[in-house]
Amino acid sequence: MEFTRKIYETRNEKTLDFVIGFLGWFVFTLILQFAANLLLPGGRFVVGLLSGNDTDIARSLDTVLPILALAINCLPLILNILVLIYFAFTRYWIALGALFAFGALLLIVLLLAAGCFALSSAPYS
Amino acid sequence: MFLGLLVGGLWLFYEARRRRWSKEEMIPIGLAAFVGGMIGARISILFFNGWETAPLVLNFFALFDPRIGPGSILGGVAGGYIGGYITSKIIGKKDCACDAFAPSLALAMSVGRIGDFLAVEDGLGKATDLPWGVPVPGVDYLVHPTPLYDAGFNLLWFGMLIALRDHPKMQDGNLFKLGLAGYAVFRFLVEFVRNNRVIALGLTGQQYFCIALLIALALAFSNQWRGTRRRVSI
Image 1: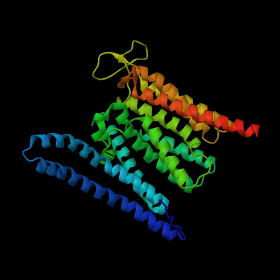
Image 2: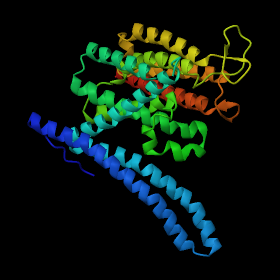
Image 3: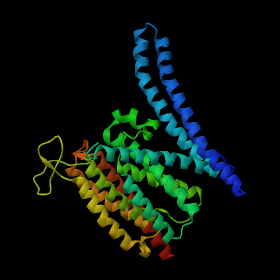
């Protein structure tokens, strides 16, 4: 697979792509969350429809469902990594913006966790 | 942990400036190492705690839940290395960026482990009669303060890595490999007084990871040594 890397000529181009990557990552993640929330109950519904009253089919679909749920669970992480790598090779500044968004959110989570710990161990909390 | 990351990050920034990295190199590599580390720390739980943790561990959105701990430091180091390595190749950095990470990691782990001890969360060890055993809520015996063993070792190791960082043989990734090897040996030994899940032959998943890491490092050093000998003999 050949990747054509964008050559950035101006600072504005870099800034624009960075902002696209930064905001786009949040939009992409929200879409993934929405899709995952739809796919899981949707999958269960389809399994229920397919199995009907047949207990054999229901039993075999029962083993498939957790695997399907796990696959749907993994998909956002895998897609995130693949999309990041793709943009890193094609539009570097979009990848950097997305990575910045990802890292910033993780850092906020760590701050919240540290804050919650500090509050819970305060003497008069 | 947050303080550990902050201190480690500041040291990394200092090391990068000392090695004259540009910010166009430092920022993406550091960022990718951080994100890779967080993902690696979480995913490695699958290996150490079993497949039953898969629904939580592989859930992307659970990465952003502050109620859930970050995961294993060993996985974090592996994930961070992979993230940093991929990024350094993408940006075309010629030499290995990882040597700057070696002392930073040791310092970050030293500080972070003190946090683990204070939070009474990760790694408090097995029962002991030793005079430095510590009490733990919920049990009526003293236990090994294993996070403090970790913190103490990492602080000493940080000093050692700082002393060696300018040695000609400790360039081009060798300082990082040495840093990892030292921690892997220490971690293998301290696991015997921790409470992690035993997988087989009395060893925990973390110990098997350390063995695999030491083998990989030995192979890397061996390849490098053979390459040097070939260049010398030509």
